[in-house]
Amino acid sequence: EDEGENEGNVGVADGNSSDEDWDKNGVIEEEEEADGGECSEDMELEDEEKEEKRSSKRKRTDIGGGAKKLKDDRGVEEVSVNKKKKSGFVFGDLSSKPGKPLTNGQEGNPANIVDNVVRSDALERFGDREERKLPFLGKDRRDANRRLLSDPNYDPKTLYLPPQFLKSLTGGQRQWWEFKSKNMDKVLFFKMGKFYELFEMDAHVGVKELNLQYMKGEQPHCGFPEKNFSVNVEKLARKGYRVLVVEQTETPEQMEIRRREEGLKDKVVKREICSVVTKGTLTEGEMLSANPDASYILSVNEGCSVSSDDRQQRVYGVCVVDVATSRIIIGQIKDDMDCSALCCLLSELRPVEIIKPA
Image (cartoon, rainbow, N blue to C red; front, side):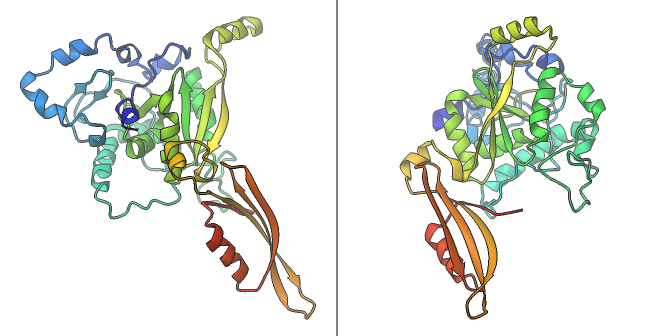
């Protein structure tokens, strides 16, 4: 896990993702530097008498604490909030928190002081651009059916994207937004080559919960190598986040063949949703191996019936699943009006997720 944190913000430094038009707006400006070619020279130019102080701030757990520019051997740059930024398309949402976990459980934790520093730095670094570039995430936010927040049928899981905004995007950016706008309640792990990238509001989750670092530039963006996937997806799931895994499903060579055959101008490799990971659907990870206890998902449906003595009683249909072991329990419970049997079932199984009718 320590190794994963040390390499957690490498970014899209791999050549196996051929989203050629993504970098037009500065999303992967750091690609060449991430290969390490110029990193050692940059480090040599640092002020030697300040190196000792800086080294203590380069730990992954001290995110947001440094105020000076520092580039390490992975090409990751910590940027002062006073530094003049490059121009580029914004990837950020600080006012809305679509990826917020169901249960925080961190109130009163001293570690929140660090989190607050990160949030404060991010607000100053990204907030003004978000207000200008992404106004549709503000108070006038709409769901996919263009319903306002005030509408009782508003669907917070979706987002309406204005046509003029979509026209301003490159192919790679548009692909990301198409996935995200239909899954605003989830954190996207977006595969680019050999790395998983987190953009916009998801990047803030990655920085706060996974101790990743923002990549340089004005848009929120962080990432990690694919070998750290199981560790990071488990961390978020354990904290109550839903993780949407978007995998790259064709190589650049296959994309070129498809373009020629179909006569397309699109230069973005195909990606598809491959899984949705939650606390109840974890099937791999270090913590799962160390703690083999069942993590049940409970689906419950409620009805009412009348007994032979004309007394009303509740009837519950239940399905209990342990995904890791493929164990499934299906049954029906007749209960009193105080739900005594259901309470006993919940106390016995202690499900990590409960699914009920909308």
